[in-house]
Length: 328
Ligand SMILES: NC(=O)c1ccc[n+]([C@@H]2O[C@H](COP(=O)([O-])OP(=O)(O)OC[C@H]3O[C@@H](n4cnc5c(N)ncnc54)[C@H](O)[C@@H]3O)[C@@H](O)[C@H]2O)c1
Image 1 (cartoon, rainbow, N blue to C red):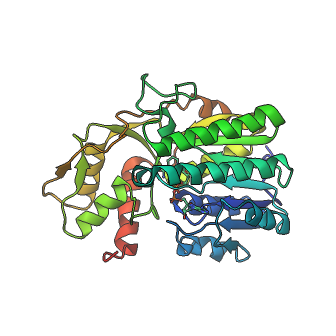
Image 2: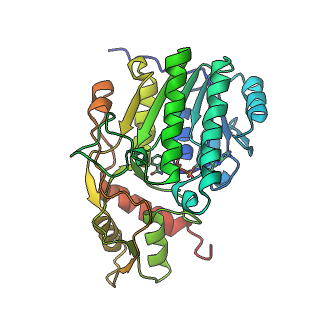
């Protein structure tokens, strides 16, 4: 059977936040779709240009702009110059920052979605692939969380992500613009930010490498649905390639629930660390339970996570052992 051609082949593709964690893996995955050009905009707030090393090796013409995606004029100029067809919007100020600087986080995240929606409406490009977050659901009210689950954001970050989703969908409803919203659950893997505002996986690995006890906030019984970052990138590309996914919001997750205590223990086992865990106060706005329904995802694409948790953690620990600069 002949493979269906990718809608990304021969297109000019832009990724905002492409020097970040998911963005840099997505850029690598997009390159294998043979786009005509690849453009990354990232202001390096948390991203790193070296996250794009592999992408530049396989696609030397990749264009990186250290630019602020909240500036409509700057983004428009690049979109025009590069004749961009498809934008993947991943740039974000993350959750922990929203607990320190709520107003700024909210306005930055909203502004980036606003800029993209308006440029899309004005036909500066054709397709917007916006990245949402499972944080918009808050703590699960049902056994599994499907896309109809109420949005109960528990942090200003989650509220900003929910607001962006509403905005993007309103452009689909009102102006029939071509949009798709990918709603990932927790991602893990190489290159996740390990500095300010880092998540539990890089922080735990870093602490153990430094000879410090891992920290768990709360009792560790809070759960998440973890997916390996390359699997998210694969799913996003497959969804964009299915026109039935356009105009929809789609959960991207493994569908497996894991308690934070079990996650930390898995890292400890992998790193042969058998000392104590330090328990700290519960973080404000910490979601208690997350397990995705992946029914819509499976209805739309043939998707099976390629990297199971044990293997993924092994790869992730190995990557940080090799790449982490412990003084940072
Ligand atoms: N990591 C996860 O577990 C997870 C889960 C669900 C959803 N998401 C979503 O996926 C997307 C990517 O997340 P990530 O984990 O890769 O985050 P990340 O912090 O690694 O990447 C975000 C990037 O955006 C850049 N950025 C921030 N403000 C910018 C601005 N004004 N202009 C240009 N660039 C800017 C940062 O420098 C960074 O490189 C986000 O939209 C996030 O909400 C992530």
